[in-house]
Image (cartoon, rainbow, N blue to C red):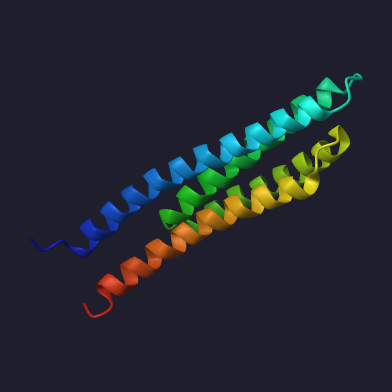
Length: 139
């Protein structure tokens, strides 16, 4: 059975989206576990619940911007994708600032965010390479 180039690309994109959904769940779980552990280690003194709520809102905006921006880029809408990724980057910076004020190890937050972005971009690059290798000799 011969698969058309569009059929091949559509199937690969579907597999990539499912893999990236699993990736997002995994990194979300890692981030949640780290935050829970960090909150347990913070002194039993009072801390700013408003800052904690802002931190979680900024993390949510980062995750949504990152995932939506990545999906939009996969559809070929690069400007809109760049806008969502810029929003995600701004939210990451704001979450970083809130995390520092709460006493989180910001280096770990940076490593988690960097690995997450790298994994999403790396999976996009793998899909592009597979698509190129499969179709390089076809016209």
